[in-house]
Amino acid sequence: MKFCPKCGSILVPQVIEGKRYLVCPSCGYKEEVQGGTGFKVRVKIKHSPREKLVVVNANAVPPTASKVKGTIRCPKCGHDELLAWMQQTRAADEPPTRFYRCTKCGYTWREYA
Image (cartoon, rainbow, N blue to C red; front, side):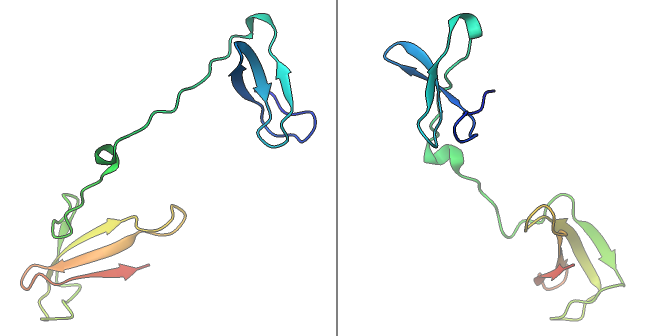
């Protein structure tokens, strides 16, 4: 890794007209790479929309859910037997969100910590 002497940005390897250069993406500074430094130019891989697709079934309870009985009541029907699970829905430095689903009426709600 090498930094630009003009602006301090990281120099990016590029091949220009068959010669290897380290080029600054910020200010345009470039220097030719001498001999056997052996850098590789990376190729960006393009993914199809199908490969980027994530399918989430909103009605499915995750396998990590556990049964809770007697401590929390369903706000809709008052039943005290629930399925509970936690899921990271916000940034990693935020606490996870707790989800509850009533086993009687199927009502699902969340609780933020």
